[in-house]
Image 1: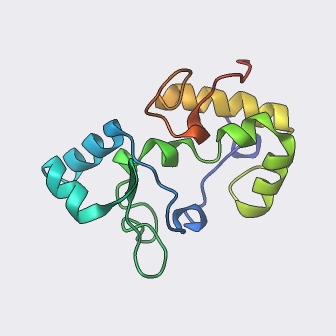
Image 2: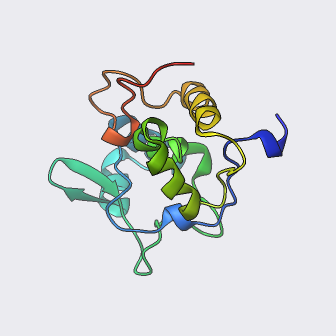
Length: 151
């Protein structure tokens, strides 16, 4: 698909990689990252995550960026599902107003395509990535696709 027809083309700006408390790691994210970094799971968790209640989150540096952000994602092949899904989060797929706000936040989202096309490409991308899905109790709420019509 031509770039001008893509709903999203990451610019690697890091805007979505900044901010504490947002990168919730599922069990499979934890395993995938530990394997990628060639660390035992317990060592990965101790060195690179923080706990907030029951949730395990990727740690951030003092400047607010993800600990793996270095002029782009330093763990891109094994990045967490929430990162794989961006910007195709539940709210942006269900709500055109949320998507419009997201257009102002993320330069990688194509503003020339209608919301319906963003949804169509987003659902296809999520399926290709194996991210989200209905009834996945481990998925962060942003990736739960219950109630979203499939194209």
